[in-house]
Length: 94
Image (cartoon, rainbow, N blue to C red; front, side):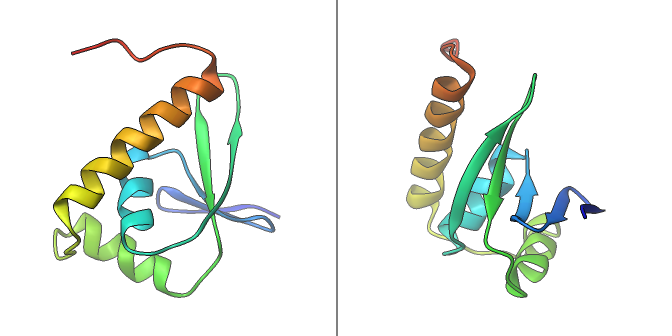
């Protein structure tokens, strides 16, 4: 059974989000990315279901979170590349 919790979807597989920047933040904050799944238009990032994810999400959304900026930027780039590979296209350059 899936249920929506803000922008996170809690399921038997773990906690899913399609928010790339939140996913990059969670990875930088040491949450384990288990898998990715694709639907027609989005890539979902699946994380292990841990109690800390809700607090990290709240800290992220209220701008109270603190992570290493370079690691966060690197994780954003990595996830964008992963999404491009999954979707079978390239990301246009800015």
